[in-house]
Image (cartoon, rainbow, N blue to C red; front, side, top):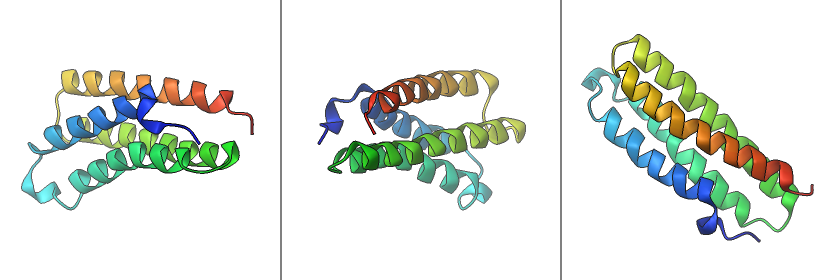
Length: 117
């Protein structure tokens, strides 16, 4: 078993989740059950799947959960682009969030490829 709290990409994804919650506070009330809910759910999914995968006894299982977390990252990326298109966030906010998201993706991908499956 891996100690997920020691994984830098888990730590970063946890902070990123907080960033998503904060930025979606400014979204229109009409998006409460739309993009706000989707973004928040996907951002919670990333550190949650990392933690759940780390608790598994095999690297194959851990890798599967990392794949799910990675999918959530790309879901977030798409939803942030839609948020920009709809005028809910500014380009600077998108760039900041995408920079952090890409760091998470790179670290998680590198770690995942190092697992002997």
